[in-house]
Length: 268
Image: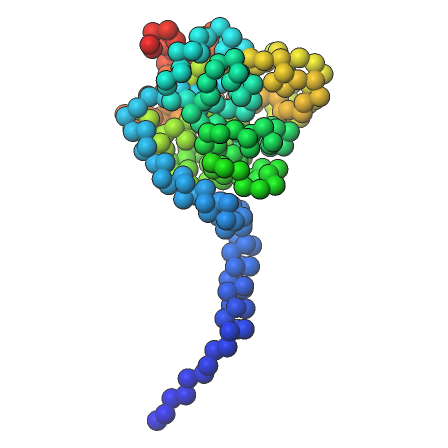
């Protein structure tokens, strides 16, 4: 018995591909977070960063007023993570942080041009990609979400923001293999009070950060959610300790009580 094979024309093949692609895009949270070329490049880049700092120590620099009481010149030859508008301090420091991270949409929207110009590897939330007209060099887009809580052991996938970019930096540092991570400038204390996550507009000099221009007059920002950030910090502490690693807090006068305290000057 002769079997006749039906020839498949290109049109049905293309239609099948399109149908599959459209189906994938309809899955919750999947579309651009995984399929966009910027994200695909980022995931590849992030995979190459796994354990690149294994056994080393790194510093996560917060942006609290305590930085003005901290001799940051000691960090010149250390591996450092800077966050949000830390670059306002670069001219005074005389050097730049090794890495940079920002996940808050309001910060990225208002500072996208400045962030894109930074020369170091950058980690930015994917939900803010629309603020960049072209793919900036060394930009790693992270699939950060507000749903959680959880600690991300694989940063190529979903990362809980934990109400602060510091929690994202802790997850990045874990992925990179740091043996010891030290927090500085994480004051965990704000002069401005109000409903957590509420968007406000600054009416003058910023008293909550190291520079009065940080969230200066007219800047839109969200009031802190310190309770949620502490949930993330506790999860980070547990993750590091289970792995035989350590997070220390060397913030001068900081109010955070989750991590073991250490004197900043004793580290050098």
